[in-house]
Amino acid sequence: MAIHVDIETGLKALASDKRLYVLELLKDPVGNFPPQVDGDLIADGVCANWLTERLEVSQPTAARHLKVLTDAGFIIPTRKKGWVFYRRDEAAIDQFKTAIREEI
Amino acid sequence: MAIHVDIETGLKALASDKRLYVLELLKDPVGNFPPQVDGDLIADGVCANWLTERLEVSQPTAARHLKVLTDAGFIIPTRKKGWVFYRRDEAAIDQFKTAIREEI
DNA sequence: TGACTATATAGCAATTTAGCTATATGGCTA
DNA sequence: TAGCCATATAGCTAAATTGCTATATAGTCA
Image 1 (cartoon, rainbow over the protein chains, first blue to last red):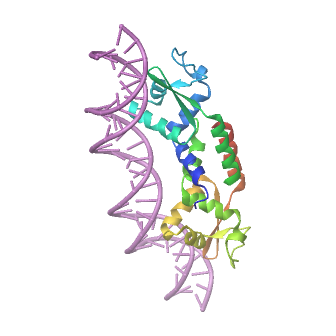
Image 2 (cartoon, chains in turn orange, purple, red, green; image 1 turned 135 degrees about the vertical axis):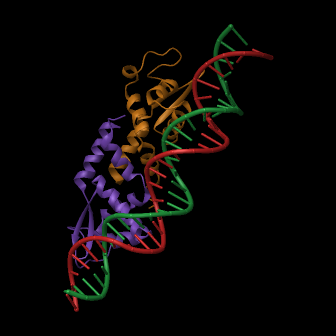
Image 3 (cartoon, rainbow over the protein chains, first blue to last red; image 1 turned 90 degrees about the vertical axis):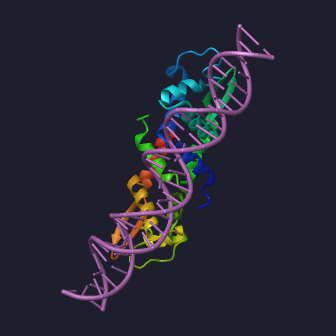
C-alpha cells in the first residue's frame, strides 16, 4: 500500500476534469491561445489569466488547480513581469506514464 | 474538458492507495495468497474475503472499493459457490495505459 | 516612492469520498 | 425446506475536495 506513493500523487492530480483540461490546453499553446507579449507561448508557457478564463472558474480556484498540477510536477511556472506562465513538464509527464505502465 | 471522459473515470478509480493495492495484490495471486478450494487463483481470481483482510478495512468498505474498480473495468468478478473472486482485466488495464500515453 | 495589477492565501459553504455499524439479500448445504 | 454464510446495501459521520468572496502579497511601472 506504500508502494505507489509517487504514482498516487500523480493520479490524484490528474483525477479532475479541470486539471486534465489544463494539460490538454498546454499541449498546443499556439493553437489554443492568442499571441503573448511578455512571455513566449512555447518557451515560457501560457499566462495563468488565460487558463483561468478557459477553466471557467474564479481566479483563486484556478490558482489552486494550477498549484496541484505544479506540486505534482506536471507543469512548470515561470514568473515574468507581472505574470506567471505555465508550460507542461514533458519529462515529468513521460516519467509518470512510464511509472503507470510499469507499476499498475 | 469533455475530451477525457473515460480516462477520468479510470484515473479516479486509481487515485486511491487501497485500490492501487488491490491491483498490486492481484498481479500475483499465487504469491500473495494461500491456495483456494472453490475458485482457481489464476482463472477466477482472489476471494473478496482475503482482499478485505489485506486492505485492513471493514467488509462493506472493501466491497465498495472493489465495486469502484469493477465499474471502472479494471477487475472482473466471478461468482462461484458462496464467494466472489476478483482478477485483473489485463486488456482493460492495457487499454487505459494506452489512453494515458496518448491523451495526457 | 506610490499606485496598480496579477497572483496567492484565508476562510467559509457545498459536495464527494471513505470509513463505520446494522441489516438485507441470495445462494449453498445440510 | 431451513439455516447459514458471503456479499451487498442503507444510512450515518468524518475527512477531503472544490467552489466561492474577501483580502493579502509582491512585483511592475509611472
